[in-house]
Amino acid sequence: MLVTKQPSAFAPSDFQSGLCSICADCSTFWCGLCCFPCLACSVADDMEECCLCGCFPAIRGVYRTKYNIRGSLCKDYIAYVFCQACAICQLKRDIDARKDQGVF
Image (cartoon, rainbow, N blue to C red; front, side, top):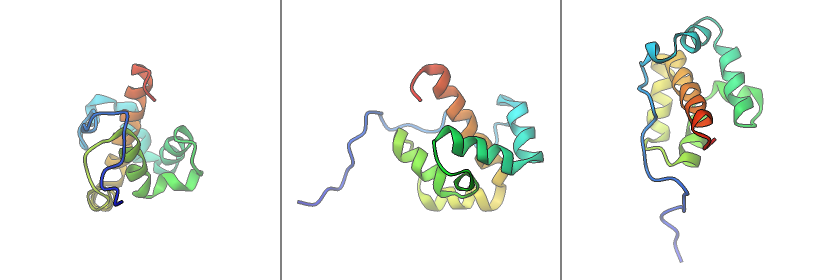
C-alpha cells in the first residue's frame, strides 16, 4: 500500500502572518535583522531542535509539516535565500501565535 497523504491533526492552512509582515512584531523583526543567529536559535529551541537547525530552511519544512501549513521545501529555500531574516521572523511569529492560542 502506498501512503500519499500523511495524517494531520490540523486542517491545511497558511502561516498566520505574511513573509514581510514586519510590523506585526517589530521586536522580532529587529532581533532577526540584527542578530539572525540568536533568533534562529530561539526558534530551534522552541521546536526542541539543535540550535544550528534554526539557521537552515529545513526547519520551516519540519514546522509546516507538523502544523499542516501549505508550501514546499523549494519555497522555504527561496525565502531563506532572498530574505533570511524575514523567513525566520515569520516562523517565530507563527510559533508565538500558536503558543498564545494554546496549540503549540
